[in-house]
Length: 167
Image (tube, rainbow, N blue to C red; front, side, top):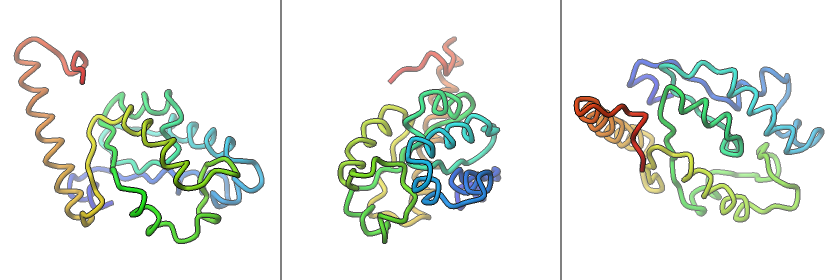
């Protein structure tokens, strides 16, 4: 939300959109329909989103959907807010009621390991956040996106489009 305000963009939180569209909490979806159903609902919500000029807070399982991630990248950047496992554990007070789209027997460390590679794969920019405040994270995102924008403008002047960039 802070980044959206700082950049005068609309904000969407896909967890809230899922809960609104389903009329129930994420944990209720997981408990009654299973984690795979939550992932499918999340994919559908993401594919229906207008991504132009938005800051979108996705649920953690968005990275399981290549089509959803491609949609997010179609008119924007995907930014991975990288925090270590200890930080995540301190933020998630009750793992069993959080509404995480995970296998029933899966622990938080196992889920963290499984998702980390997917986050890295889809990220255009990675911000290490473990010891940063929300304001610091926003400042880093703005620095990184401005840097990338300058690079892309330079590439366009040389005849290459941003679509031809690879990392």
